[in-house]
Amino acid sequence: MAAPVITVIVPGFDVAAYVADALGSLRAQTRQDWVAILVDDGSADATGALFDEAAAADARFRVVHHRERRGLAAARNTGIGLVETPLVGFLDTDDRLTPTALERLVGTIERSGSDIAVGAYVRLRPGADGAYRAGAVQPWVAAATDPERTAIALADHPALSGNIVAWSKVSRIDLWRRLDLRFPEGRLYEDQVVAQRMYTRARAIDVIPDIVVEWRERADGTSITQHQDALPVLREYLDALRGGIEVLDRAGHPAAVQSRIALVLTMDLPPLVRIGQSHPDAAYRRAVGVFARELWGRADVAREELDEVSTTLLSAARLW
Image (cartoon, rainbow, N blue to C red; front, side, top):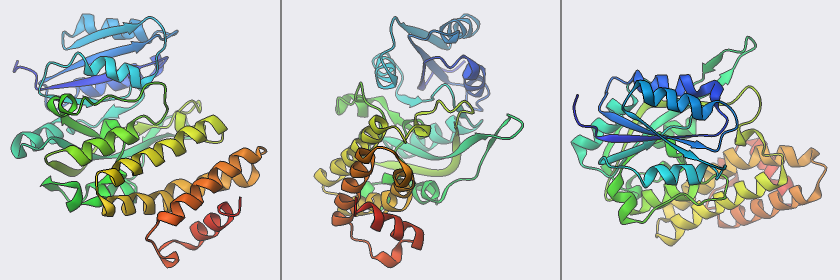
């Protein structure tokens, strides 16, 4: 077997129900020159044991156990510190790679010499029968990755700033080391700032329209994105959005700043405003209102560019 060129970091906390799917999607890759670091983040269920079983059966898997839960960012950082291959990628244990994901992402970097390759992704949602089915590529995902582009800079394609998830990318480990880059520990939505730092500092970036990951929305409602009605989660979310925009601003990417603001105004804020309209805690509404005013004050976007629903909701939020 060829020497591995990429390490896939797979963090997991109490995700035993999904381990087989995630690791199976790695084994099913059309490109097999990979290794994986499985980080059990202090799980109380069988996650750690399933990771150990996988490593016993396949030498490409290496397992690290955290004695106590330290969070997703810390688990990813543990993996980053152990990477010995030229490239690194991420897979959350409740998600799964599409079969050609590594072939396409690794292949484009090898041809172009770029620091990062970015692909598209879809939601994996449960149906009435309990089975998970993949949806369509959402417009903002397509805007970031379609059509295929090779060896570009963020200034060439500002809409790329909308693809902020860690697991849609493959990157050079040298980029992480050159930037001394790690995920912020103890925070939710930890990939937003990291993605923008990578985009603004990469020497070149490739994007491909291929779906590389199916992102699971858990049927039991335990995904972080399913808890944005909780005030602490909301505050983490808004802080992450602010932080990512500030990275773009400080790096001197005004077009990317405006692209990101426009996307947040049309996609991220309206659902939060809807929650706020019936939320029992006035602090929730105030937090959304403050953020809406901040964003609107920085936005170089005309009202007619927003749909009627978004305009109405944002108007309400700015009154809170």
